[in-house]
Length: 356
View 1: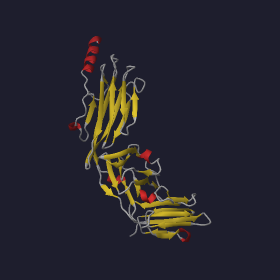
View 2: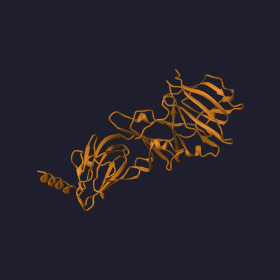
View 3: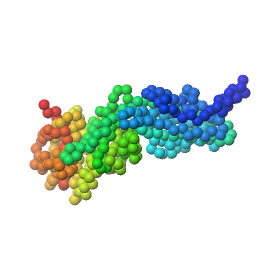
View 4: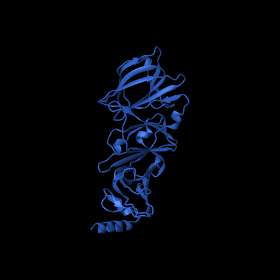
């Protein structure tokens, strides 16, 4: 019986082929097992070499994301699995990494792909592997043109989400490269999402793709192309403020992270310009409706040259308030404004104010 079992296992392994995922297999909630079976580890023959390309297809209106689970059961000393993830990073798996089928999980947002190459040498060593791919429909959101002049560019990416879709996307496109920042908010700081992504470009024309967590660690978050695409798979608040490159390329401008003003949580603001000759700018947005109230203003420096301006830092914005002469509370019947700090250290608190 033992000999018969071994023969059956090897025969099954020798029958293994290099079949790729077919377009007809990709639909919402479909599940595909590579190289077959039920998702459990499958035996590999000797002299096996297959490059599996796993795609999460997308176009301008629809697409799919893919959850990929790779189980490594390599036992042969010279057998190996090569993985190239969606960002082009390379990983090597062998009999020292995850033997016994420890799962490695990957998420492919729409419009991306990864590859898994499995290689065995001349001697059958009972190496095994398996890949499970599960597809989910994605909502490919709109393409929005960047506003110009004195208008602020901002969006809560989570508003693109719809029930029945794992991922949602939105693309902003302009006439020049785009700088962006993820706004901090009063109750939870900055969104933490390991499977949210930022594309330099569009879904169909990617210059680069980065995880959100990595992208926000880089300052400034500048693009090489004239478009930026955000992808989210969570319902959490995802506030983004964007600027054309020309606004931030002004020699004297330094940008602080933008701030989202909320209803239930006050947003404390503290600014100190420590760079003489430069102007520090911080953009403030109420992502829900017009109306922002400023309270608890405290001027710390003996001299204060700081202003509230009507929009982003460009020639179309006008001065709304000189902080040196301000009284609080001050209500702004606007959805956004910017602090323009020439030479001042101050603190204040901002909160939403709904104008009736």
